[in-house]
Image 1: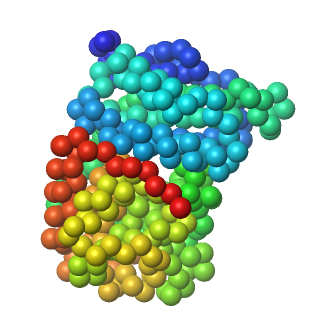
Image 2: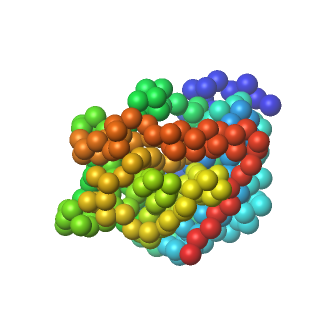
Length: 294
């Protein structure tokens, strides 16, 4: 195994392992010139990938939805990921798997040569106070492009993230474009969204990305709470006892303010904390969530 320094992992790029500082794709690649591609991000706990197969199944599902051909089987992509990890120090890293339409002579249509990239980076933990004291969201009246596809098109997400950062929030929560209080909220730019009403755990299921950490949270919550997958209206947020978001890098992060409005008593709730503890036990036991889609 290579002792590659943190700043220069070996990436996999179209059949070659290349130092990150030298890795590149062609300027005619459709991922660059048209944003045509899909990706996944997962992480390792220690050296062990969490939910790798589920992420690959979601990658395959995303590609199918945009008619992007995958000439590799999931076993082959998984072997490529494992080979990339083996050539690096894989302890607590994020794994980014990208498939693009590949080189195109007319800068528009794929020519049957998709690109496959596997990139590593160190996990960058979020600040401890966001879990201890809770984090804030803003709502963002914008529609996400093809929400069930994890595509390279992140224009709305970038806009939402910038607005969130400017407001001192950790994330932006997509809501109906009209901004009506009776309209719905769906998910954040890079996270799924949940609320508790008593022991009822509610999360949107339509027009959201089927998160792998979301699936794990629902799995560990199943014996403790009533699970309800349905739309959440904006005016329900004031009635929520607790709220949290989930993602690969955020895990389960409590939310205590949305648009400056306090959620519950304004501190992380006991149900959210219990769920977070159970999630870490789930990870520690080496369990892996399954990918499900409608």
